[in-house]
Length: 147
Image (cartoon, rainbow, N blue to C red):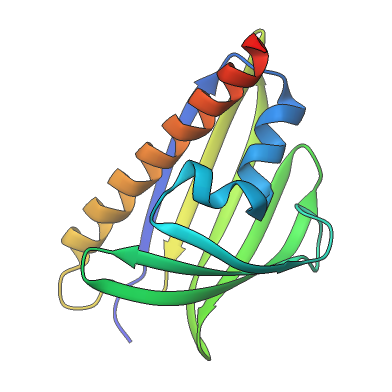
């Protein structure tokens, strides 16, 4: 097994913590936030320990399924999920929703177990996807605030 890849990004979002938390932790929003994802199933209370989801992901010509399980959470504050592709670990994600003025700072860390032969490329792709996802959460949270 190679070297793990760890990517952390954060974004200040001028929206209530509950709105940001829901968007970041409820699998029902995955496809809206990231068109390359399609929710196949979800069980348990979103954002709570034990909740699971299965998502089909399409990246270019690649297609795969990822199963995620919330392993720890302080609802509204932080969450840790573990993911698998089949029986192989696919990574760990940790999200934090921190007070930030009139809104929140959403910090998200993705740890992939192995960068493979091209760890810099894997890191760059992961970072780009994470930045895009955080921007989508902000966009959706602000749209909800305007309603």
